[in-house]
Amino acid sequence: MIIRHFNDIRMTPRAVHADTWTSFRLLTRDDRMGFSLHETWIHAGTETHIWYKHHLEAVYCIEGEGEIEPVGENGKGNGQPAPIRPGMMYALNNNDRHLLRASSRLRLICVFNPPLRGDEVHGPDGAYAAPGAEEASA
Ligand code: 9YT
Image 1: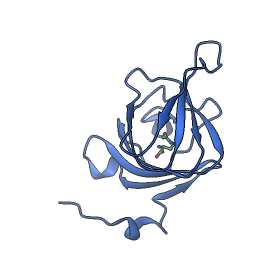
Image 2: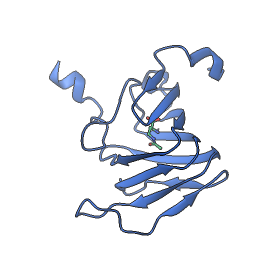
Image 3: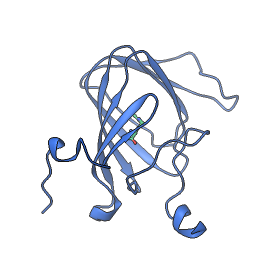
Image 4: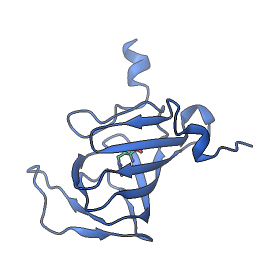
């Protein structure tokens, strides 16, 4: 059994910082659960373009307000944002490209399949590298 508390990881390399978010990676690939589990903080007043081409992600909001807007093939938002508030869940079951906006700090519980290695940040296209890509190029 694996038991961890947020306070055990918040000051360790499991806390990964990007411009618009910080992700606390409670479970990662090496924990061998078949998924990774994160608490992600999206900073207030930010917009993030995300496109997980190689991963499926489910997101459950436990704090804050924001919105998610799908992005079309032309790279632009489709103008139909869905509000994010505590209790709201979204699942990117089609590797959906999107814009994530936070009007106040969002606290999100995120699950990734396949699991993240643990140190990933978004590339310029909004994606994380394909699983095994780093090992293949080493
Ligand atoms: C909601 C979302 O995808 N935010 C970006 C960070 C990601 N959740 C992560 O790596 O924890």
